[in-house]
Image 1 (cartoon, rainbow, N blue to C red):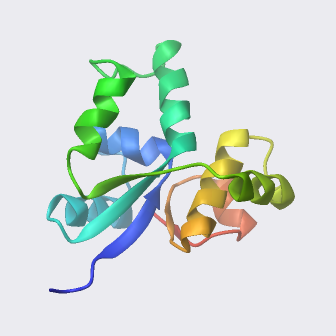
Image 2 (cartoon, helix red, strand yellow):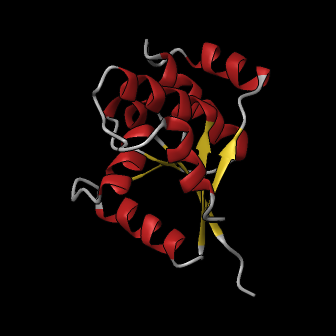
Length: 135
């Protein structure tokens, strides 16, 4: 069996993919397609799950089901794996200091923890050089 590729998802690409939006960059779109074909693992940091829940709560996104059910559906596909938040990630995010957005810091720290590229179009993350970015 061929070795699987793996990436980490930021919040917006995960939501764009779930909505079937055409807003994904070509490389990010290819990573999601590869995951759907069983060739790529996409890790979803706990910080992404929390950010999605807050966006749903204030009606910035409509998941069409509860947050719990949205992620249960997502994780029923083995190509999508949750990645737990650790104290080490919190310390890494604090020390990075490239952004005032706590979610961005924690998401980058999760990608660094896994040693994987991050699917994101976020210019601040890209310019920080803290992690390899795929878009």
